Image (cartoon, rainbow, N blue to C red; front, side, top):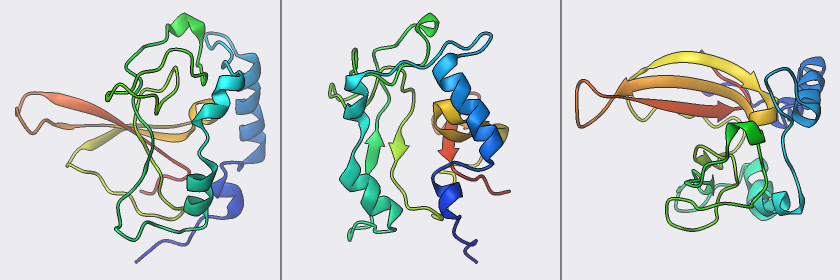
Length: 163
């Protein structure tokens, strides 16, 4: 059975409001051990309004393929520089620019309320909310397909994590 669709406030990640305001303060001012996030005009390059609007309206592609919003940035940004959503030193795994400075994952554009399942069996190691880094995170570990002894880590971001 499909869970109820999230509210508009949950979809846009603004609840609970007191928590989100505190997290926004960390984003712009920083905190002990957390430098402020970095933005500039190049940050606007990460927005894809047409894709975002279609996704929020619940419209999926006719071929059922899920669009990729951002890819992993292969050009790392020093931790001391803080979290950067600028596009100053970017190169995704294809050599393109579908990423931003401090991006370390792959973002898939799915509609609110979409049930997302794991691609492999594993165990959730940590769940946390980091508004300044994009929302709710789930960190897990699963066996590698090529070796029974190798493990890989995965991070998933969502507006709500279901048990």
